[in-house]
Length: 446
Ligand SMILES: *Cc1c(COP(=O)(O)O)cnc(C)c1O
Image 1: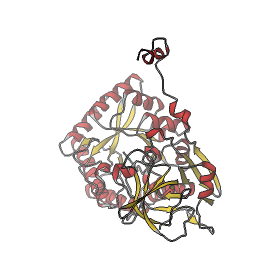
Image 2: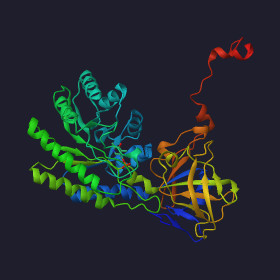
Image 3: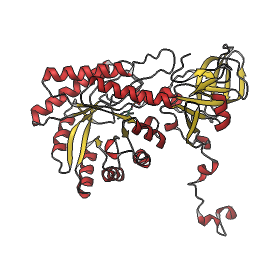
Image 4: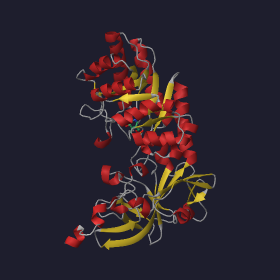
């Protein structure tokens, strides 16, 4: 078992995070519960900042908040001196509501609407990452109408296949994201961007995928992108000064995962950028990183309470918990694997192999398959580690389950940062057509 940050097993054999016992947190806040180790998130933010500072004269780290986007998290990123990468009007709104400085916001996304672009321009976000020709022209029109000049990066699809799950590869030729480099579309986009009256082309962006362990994809991307910067200089005479290499650094979920440290990742990529610039005598650009998972993933723990058990002799034993694919769709979506432990029996030896099932009405709603755990009884608490990224932010109300509460824990204190949803929250936007209430309504007719 691999515990990170402030997580440890206390004298009672209970899992403890931020100096607080998980069974007590579960009692106080209910389950399912997402517990975030605030100190570890801050540590990861600092590791990113220190790594870029040590390797690059000009750099920026933008937390990709789609990994876990709440007001408290935006505030934390702000306090830690990070910039923010948002991908929708909703994320932008959350950041603004948390008081995040707009000038430090990067706006990504492959189909930003007119309203979203307008909101971003009005807010004066730092950079808009333009994904396609439609958006390029739409943004120019929006900026022109609002009488503003907007700093943009162009998202390039560099034709690189990161070694990761196909659903989270994003830089390959056959991708919905960005301007394709191979067929000349990217160069055409650069020329088109330079000719737009209200856009200021500042640089290029690429993002090759997520949950990446092998750095060669990044090195290749850095080389391809710097070469393209040089090609742009030769053809147009313009020297672009910003190079955003996206996010994607992988983290440990389960056996077989071999994450690279933040320092090594940044060091390797920075070296590749510098070497390529030296070879081409191209001035070193400001390098931007957009980490999401590597900042919040390892800091989160999802805690569920055990209920029903179904034993099928000779086949499998299912143990069901009070959450599942509604709060964590990753296993169903990507076949993701996790490390689980029993928070109230953390130092007991494994006694049985079970499959942890969720409570949704789907056979695919399995959180962890065939895991060796101490004997589980109703009321026990299953903790799933590395639950901080792409779980709460992907949570739904499927089966009308309410989304869990999220607490930050630190130095023996727990801070509720997202309240558990109530049944009233579930029906908040529901309407029954007023006409149905009239006499002669459908029900009466039937
Ligand atoms: C998702 C995403 C990121 C963050 O990826 P992680 O794997 O969470 O680090 C960064 N940039 C862009 C454009 C993304 O889509």
